[in-house]
Amino acid sequence: MTSLPRANILARVPEPRTGPDVTAMSDWSRVTRPIPVPNEWTKPFWEAAKRGVLALQRCQACKHFQHPPYATCVRCMATDLAFEPVSGAGTIYAYTIMYHAGDKRFAAAIPYASIIVEPDDAPGALLAANLLEAPYTEAKVGRRVEVVFQPLNDDFTLPQFRLARDTR
Figure 1 (cartoon, helix red, strand yellow):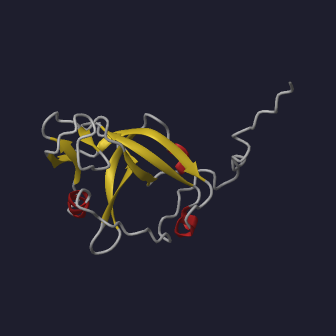
Figure 2 (cartoon, rainbow, N blue to C red):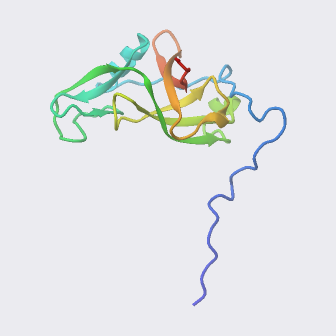
Figure 3 (tube, rainbow, N blue to C red):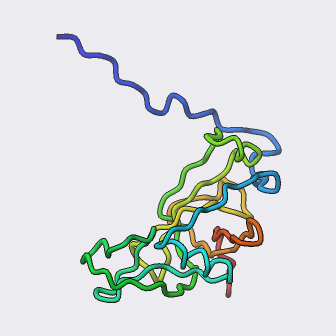
């Protein structure tokens, strides 16, 4: 029996860019973001973000934070859930660099860092966002980040993240 050659899953990764724009920041000024469509579970999250507050769903029975919001606690299945403010400081849990726009509205920002953030005071809750105010190459697992709020329109504000500023 002959074995088939293994597929190289990295074959589509573009070559690293060189030149003066290697550390250029992604240009979000020309991106038209999709507008969220809140439901009964996500509405408190969006209302808090509009006020410049990062609030996450927390189970009142076992005290577990979870994101995205659900109808029941993912840990204990309780239905007594409430939104509580969190600091917005956290770490990059995972990331990917986007070199191709799956949605044409994001083409102007290519390449950009799409990150997953775990807030310090809400372990286990994971928020998807973009890394703003830094070159996309600065996205690394474990890097410290802080929330920033990006208005989408008069009704919606999007929590995003930037590298944490040194407070010392």
